[in-house]
Length: 323
Ligand SMILES: Nc1nc2c(ncn2[C@@H]2O[C@H](COP(=O)(O)OP(=O)(O)O)[C@@H](O)[C@H]2O)c(=O)[nH]1
Ligand SMILES: [Mg+2]
Image (tube, rainbow, N blue to C red; front, side):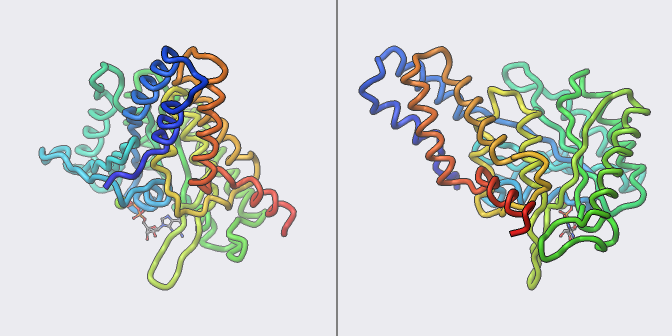
């Protein structure tokens, strides 16, 4: 079941606006209708157990996704989850044995070269997830350095590396469970992990990447932990997506998830909010101020009412000051 689309609110209000002329109205409506059809294709990969499913689940409205799988046994390992606008491909990374690794690598490479019906690269973004609790990330670096980077076609901005399970990075020690955040020792450790990850990719490939760390959290029968830095991950996903496509991502962002815990290094809620509005304004095209103003006003209202992720501002500031 697909959800009602936030762009429908904007479309309807533009439709009923009496202070916008017909020519502009039609242009805006045409462009919004086109935007509503836009797909953002994300390939999520990483070793089994790194937290791909947990991340997709926490970030997106994944339960409502149409689940598809290739019929061809060669591609069966890549699972496809199609939501309103976001399409996630979940692929195992390396580390499952020589034969499986070969198959996974080939599937990933094929996906990286796949084109959409406009002849553009299908995959907008490759999210490689590393298990932050693992000491041996050798196969993950093989995945990044030998499989992904050489097959990105030179556009390295499509690559995003994220270190998950930040809470378990020092065996669960130094995680402040009550506040759901790392203490200063763990934070230093994680910062160092980010630097060494970046260095290992740079040395092997010459490519600069800025990894981030986060925790997808978990939900089990009698225990659960909220995510950490998931809003930072979303902000990074937006940064790595073409500006004209960003506006639709929010439609499929999980409204139930608590995006409030983060490192406070940036105002991620505001960044996401601004990035979405900027993307919307780009998509409506060259029209008068009145039309743009209407789009922004209605969009802000719809977004603020629907998505907690856009309001992580207060909570992160509260955390810094400890109240
Ligand atoms: N403590 C902790 N556990 C996590 C986190 N992310 C995932 N997990 C757990 O790690 C295990 C593997 O996660 P899953 O999402 O299935 O990994 P996948 O194989 O990459 O899809 C599950 O038991 C998750 O609950 C996290 O950030 N922190
Ligand atoms: Mg999984």
